[in-house]
Image 1 (cartoon, rainbow, N blue to C red):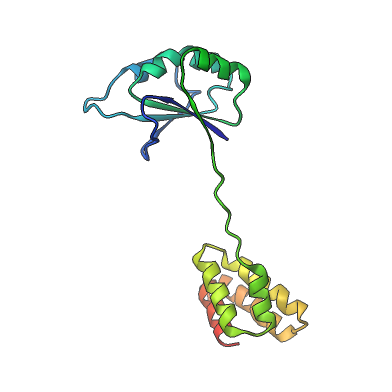
Image 2 (cartoon, rainbow, N blue to C red):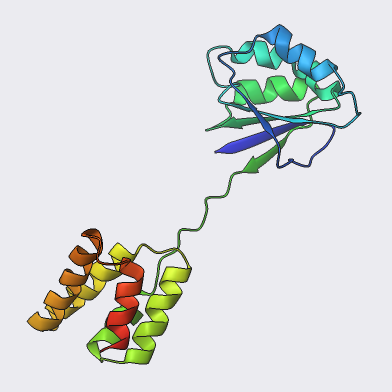
Length: 187
């Protein structure tokens, strides 16, 4: 995903207003670009898929007006082809192309948690489970990992206990996070 930022201010405000390019006409966008707010503050408008959409030429034809606007316009595109990019540059758009960063997906230390259960190291297991839960890992994923490791250890009683915890939490016997912590502390 790419972002093309057009306008005077380069800062992207938290209160950016999302515009649906399917619902807005070129005249309405031109009016937004040329109209200052009553208090003199600037606004940020976000249009997703407008430049590469069916009506991309309409938005590109407004590029000079967008450059002169006190407001910031952000065009989020999957990719920006050469033709629209050249047309924007020709219109005097000093666009900033920013690669949108993917949020780093948290992965808990599966090997550390599994090894701690295999070694029956209560402290390391509890720390690993607690850290994973604080980081936003789903308790179901942790319970599944622990049940897998117990089966791998060929400890049927331990495996049964973990699976029972999971099912009990879904039956309303308690929160799975708390049940997992209690299980770890009673090892």
